[in-house]
Amino acid sequence: MDLHLPSNEPNSIQDSRYSTSVSRDDGELLMALHIPQKRLRDSDSPPQTSRKRPHTTNTPDQPSYQDAGSLNLQHGSPSILTDPTQAQRHGIFHRLLEHPELLHEVSKHIEINQLVSLYSISRTFQNIVNKRFTSLVLAVATTQALESSTIFLYKCYKSLCTIDPATRMNEEVQSKIRNVPSFRWARFVLYREHVVEDIIHLLAIEGHHLPPGSSASVKKVWFLMDIGDNARRIGVVRNRSIWSNQDLFYATMLFVKLDMRFNDPVQGNGSPDLRRMLLAQRSLSTLWRVLRREELTSNLELAMMYLQWKYTPQDQVLQGQDTIGVPGSKLGKLQYEGWGKGENILLRPDEIIMRESIRRKLGFQRKYLDMILYGYIDKDFNDIPAAGLKEGDGTFLAEGRKGELSNLDDPASHNGDGGTSKGKERRR
Image 1 (tube, one colour):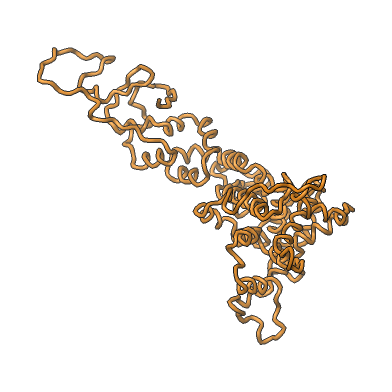
Image 2: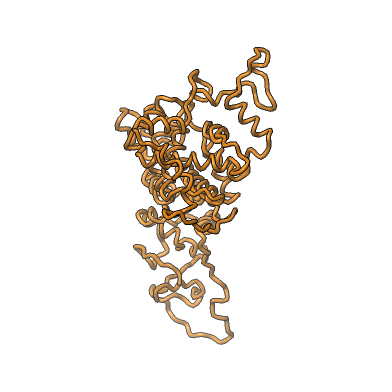
C-alpha cells in the first residue's frame, strides 16, 4: 500500500509549485530515501478492439477513455496524470516537502551522509532547512549522539561552525551574523560517539571491562585533549559541574585498563610509557587505531611517534634535520603547549586528573586493586564468565564509513590553540 499524505488539492494536477518539468534529480532523491519510484505501465490501459464504441460527451468529472491509462487510484478517488512523469511528483519525499514540521521530524533520523546529499541535491529541501538550520543540526546530533553532543559543544569548535543561513544576528556581538553548528560538527560528534563506543568494546574483547556509563568520562578525556594549554585544561577539570568525582574515578580506571592492555600479564614490566605517549597525542583517534592494530604495528612507527612526542636533539647540528622520516620541525613538539607553539610542558589528561583527585582527597590509591579486578570477579570473589565477545563483533565503524568520517577528526582542522576556542570551557 502506498503511503498517501493529504494535500490541499488531491485531485488537481495544475499545482503552480510543480509547473516546471521534472528534473533528473527527483529520481535520485527517491533513491536516497530508499523509496521505489512509481511507474505507470502501458499494459495497464485496456486493449484496443475493432468494435466501435458509442460516442459520449466527456464531463469534467468523467475522464475520457484515452486517459484511462493515466488514472491514479488513491483512496478510491481517481486523479488524472496527463504526464507519466508526474507520478514522481506525488512521491513521499515531495509530499514531505509540503509539511516542514513533519519533514523536520523525519530528517533527524536520516543518516548524516544521506542528509547532506539531500541538502545538496534538492533546492526546495535546502530552502526549508535553511529557515531552521540550527534546530535541525542540533536535532540530528541529539537524536543520534545525545551524550557526545552535550560534551563536544559546537561553541567550543569554531572551525566546525558556519554563518547562519537565515542571517539571524548575534545577540552578543552587534551588527554581526551569528555562528551556528554545521553538518561538519554533526559528523564530528557522530564520529566521536562511535569511536568511544568502539574503544570500550575493543578493551572488553581483551577482557578489560569498563563500568556502564563510563563512556561520558572517556569523551571528557578526549575533550581535554582538544585543549592546547595547561590553564584551560586545569580549569575544566576543576569545574565540578563538568568533572564529577565519578568521572574522575572512571577516567582513572580507563588509564589502569590501558596499562593492563599494553603490558603482558606475565612477561611485561608494567611500564606506563605507551599509555602516556598515546594520551599526549592531539586526538584519542590515535589510541583507537592502535587498539584496532592499524597503527604502531612496527618498531619504526613506534620510534617515529616517540620522536614527535619527546625527542629533542642535543647536537646543534642535528636540530632541524629529518630523523628516520620525521621532519625536524616536528621533533619533540607534542610535549609543549599548543603542540609546539608554546614553551611550557603540556600536562597530559592523566596527569591533570590524578592531581585533581589528590586535591579533592578522593583516595583513589586505595581503589587500584578494585579497578584491576573489575570485570573479572564479583563481590564474592567468584570468576565472572566471559561475555563471548570476539574481535570483529560489534565494531561500530565499518571500513567504508570510517573512511568517510575519519577526516572530520583531524586536529589540524580545529583552531590553532588546540581545537577549543579561548574561554569556551564554560558550559552554556
